[in-house]
Length: 397
Ligand SMILES: *Cc1c(COP(=O)(O)O)cnc(C)c1O
Image (cartoon, rainbow, N blue to C red; front, side, top):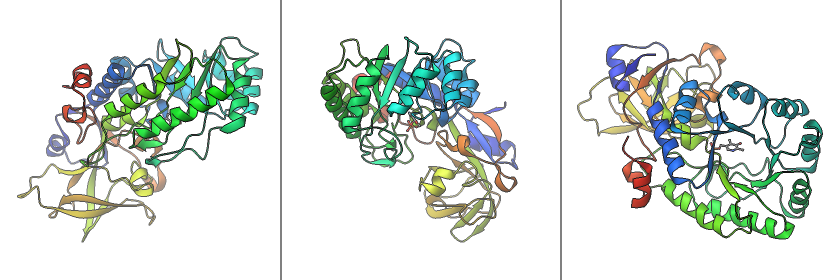
């Protein structure tokens, strides 16, 4: 794969016909090292966010040794990664998936119902070496993508499930997910306080607390709580839990470890006033921009403009014939932008490639490696509030 200093250098050298994925494995490595240095527990990368070998290699190279998989195909795909622990954290699994995952050596499963517990016990032949995580429902607080309506158990049913799971698990944990792209550190405090209530009511020994994913990426220069605030809140809340003294913490970041690892470089195929028709869209890597209103950071690449600070708002239309292939933005770009220009859409490493389909003949990409930093980062000097965390993070890379 070819390496360029930046997307601008790439466009100066060639005029690609297909959209380009610009990989920044160095940014993924930096994110992983930050989590390893600052999170006081195991870091399980949520494989579904992006499973390209370059990203997995960068995370592994940085020291990530736990993976959260959410389906059997993910586990089959990831199983050749040496010396790692897999956690099958989808609370609803088919019997075949449980049996096969167990045969592949997976011993860690999540569940949120007694039916699922029964399935796990039956399909693992009543194994005595299981780590079972009871997924509880927690309120989403300032999450861009709330997840609490689909999974998780609460109240008396959760207490009963904790008690029943304790009887068969070698290690009993509680897990939750506060919602993806959670901007409020307090969301973790409130989830852990929910966990505290359930543990107290159930009166069972808890060996693991999994705070899930949800750690935000940075998509703009708006002020945003730094990741160190999230870790601080988790540390403080965890310290108040009535759990075993050797209870382990775990987290499952997907977005936070992958977002900065890729950019998407698209071409403008037509301009109509404030509307730019580009060669990738909602059926490709821009699902989140179309359907969740994400305004990814953008910049014009490969052409100098006289006043790069004079920006105007644009909306994007994708290449398919479908009118929902529309990204409202606003995306701020030079007012002189025109047909044939290229745009770097930054921090698309999380979920974008994983979701992209091939509708209407699009969704094919070329890939290059880029050496420059991502447009925005959560891991640079300015993104870390506490000096101590800064030193640990080795924040220069
Ligand atoms: C998707 C998912 C994650 C990752 O979430 P992010 O918001 O990307 O960090 C973690 N855990 C589980 C169980 C998930 O389903």
